[in-house]
Length: 496
Image (tube, rainbow, N blue to C red; front, side):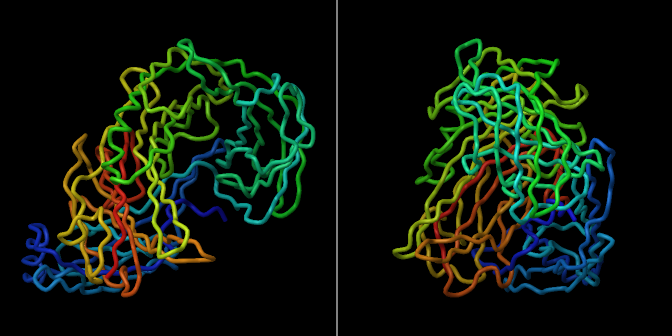
């Protein structure tokens, strides 16, 4: 069965308590507990699948999810656990929980809130289905390409199941410069970004798009949807499939232009981390059913209508008009995504370093990108701390009951914060990182519940500031809306 994205991050383990002072919110919680008020924590998990063949809502099975509510005593710093359960009908419940701010644990995810009713539902693109996890070759032969250019690439998608991906360098038989056909192109479907197995009997169509290298009205290079091959294909996991046909040019066309303030993203690099390295900046524009504006994943991705990452510079760009051909339904909402990427390296001892990627991103309707300069809507948090010490430095002796704290971003208003905790290790001479906890909060601090941090281990944190008006990620962690934006901070390493 297709596993909805809400399962991402619900599959790991946890730890921590609290120290580093009393916050006002925690003090209020302590007084509520002393009143002896007892409540029940509940949640529901409807997943809505958005498909061209029709939408469907089903519960996400929570029966295998570890569920508990943790309440922290703000005087002693001790956590008390209240066990709960999840059910196949998508509900979760934790009985007999005293009033106050809880850390609702769902697998490795914690929702930090005074709420008692949680909406754990999500919206997914595509019908429910099965993924290809074994090598599943696809061979393509086709005519009708426009003469292939070195800057062109192939974008695979199937609208009904929400399958998509790029034909990258691992494929064989890729077209050479000047080619007008594909002969024996072969790629592993399991390597696609969302490899839902296609079934023509369920209305699935295999589509392969030629994204063509072009130049905008102001001389800025970009790639745009140009020609598309549509073919019928049914797949069986682990077995090869072949498709053939002719690339044709969609009748519908469009234009897109942006005033891209890349310097505004780059100006935040040292706020991500003083040692952060700039890696890329890009803008994507696509179209989606309007309901996918609330989808859990990025709103903009294959099939792309425009992809803009013209060079490695960080200077501002006014593109002028960029044209594209549009095979997607005319009623779909056009959406856009801009991001600047950064990395930081982490190394244990003499092991080769692990490179952590982070970004500052903005997602809006495409018309907003055209109407106003594209720049960050929210910046990174300021002055991150582990307990009371600056978190950009490497720290030891933080205790297994550590807290993370920060100040508000200098740019924009954060509506919520998400904290990812990663544990470092070593494998085959290289440093590795595994995410062990995710915490959602509307506060400027979190305490790490029991077992997140373990003695003798080393960790780092990613602190994300989110801008998403009208939503609360601490009670509805998988709900999305437009506009939305986020920015990350990467801490140094710390150990108990």
